[in-house]
Amino acid sequence: MNPIDQLRAARPEHLGDTPVDSRTRAAELSRAMAQPRQAPARRRVVRPGWGLGLAGAAAAVTAVAVTISATGGTVPDAPFAQAGPGRTASSPASSGPASSSPTASAPRVELSSRSILLAAAHGAARQPETTGAYWYTASVTRMLSEAADGGYTVVERTRNEGWTPSATGGDQWSRTRSLGARPASPDDEAAWRRAGSPTEIEVKAPGKRGGYVLSTEPGEAEDSHTPLVDGDKVFWLGRNVTMKDLRGLPDDPAELKAWLLRSYGGTGTESDDPMSSDAWLFAVSVGLITDMPVTSQVRGAAFRMLADLKTIKVSRGVTDAEGRTGSAVAIEGPARAKADAKGADGVLLDRLIFDEATGRALARENVVMRPGGLQAGFEPGTVWHSQTVLEAGWTDEKPAS
Image (tube, rainbow, N blue to C red; front, side, top):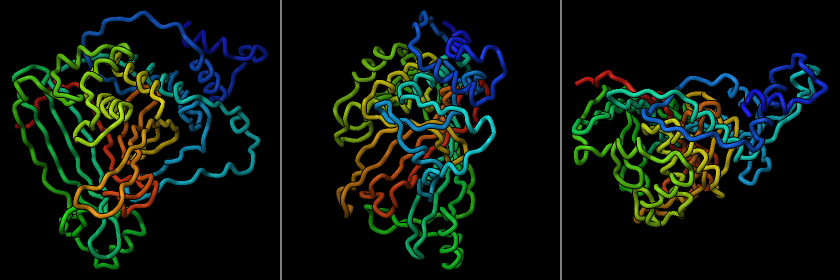
């Protein structure tokens, strides 16, 4: 049954074909998408790509604001909504007095975390396929630091671009540009002004002696390029992988999981610290979804694989540092202090914010859940580090040399 037939079947008979408001239509579509569906026939996808446009009907699903627990029940709306660098997560807003408008009286639809991720998988798999000479990504990273003097926090912002060749034997190019540091919140700005509004700010480096200096002025772009490792390795996915590896990943969730777990050794993706298999799969899958040139079908399979993890948390109405709102899937993990750092370990939430209609990654964030380790100075709910995705797709345009 296609989505239109599902939507028609889910609609109460007494409504007939009379017009309905957008929120009721979204509710109907959400119920239809949550029903078990016959698996479509698998098709072979040859060219990888990532369409960034919105899918019309599926976009209506995102109009219903709920937050979902991993077990399928609901928890308070958007526990981290509006949280950005230098800000803690806001509390859910009160509903206020009831309105007489039709949209205010529309029924609230509650979906399980699995349904949210399967909707994203459906949207991701439907994106058009393209190809090109380079896989291009552009993102902005933001990281919080405490000023050495003055009692305020600053956010360091950096724009990163990357060009990865589709052919073997080429160079991988990157461009990095500091966008300048700034106070992380209005209160921090007030403290910064009391400190004399310095343009060069010394910040603390947890776990290290001394600190380093951040400038409030944007810097010049710095370009660099290096030959591909072994002439063909392009990304890290638990191990170094080639473009051929990425384009040949299985688009079945179980097969994709088995393929990835062959590289799991009980430790983190980039450290020797112990890491559970769920946390490890989450880390590599989020990297795959965020900025790797896999096919649309494989990106959809990654969302389906995440839907089967028992330790994830899913929420809706989460806003990234660029002001875009989407759904989020997250997992908690330890925030360990370095060997020479003082203080106890903390807990960080690693979360991916995505557009539910397309499966497009919007941002990856680290949220302080329990202060400790390198995040000992930050309040619970603070987005300590984020990477917002601006662009990800194929291009034939060569990087500047």
